[in-house]
Image 1 (spheres, helix red, strand yellow):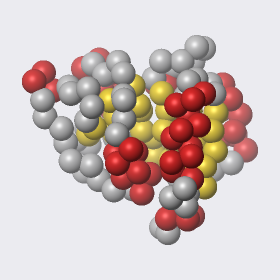
Image 2: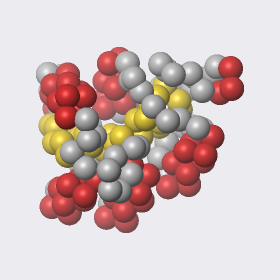
Image 3: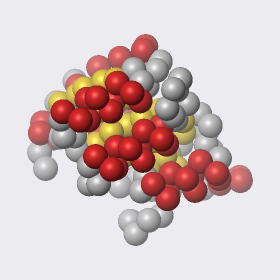
Length: 143
């Protein structure tokens, strides 16, 4: 798929963070849409197809995992990336059961976000306890 044709939905209740990510990725030639809540994202997903959704975990109302499960019902082929500062074995397990293959630990590195939106495979991270705060967590689901 060409870079300019890949459509991405960013979902995060932190407006400054969401706008920063949107700006960085849009400058790289992707089609970007953004939502400030899971509920807003579901409305957007009901009217448009995306190649990728990057969502925060902890948001008021529905959280990112609940959003991901509902989004997968709307579009089973939607690629979803979960970005969170609350990475834990429980979150990784639930994300995996929903079909989320990539969990980014916040704060996310710009290089990791750009690699994910380009569709690149990120290497698995290994750290004490299996979780490192500034690197990408890649779950092994056949990739």
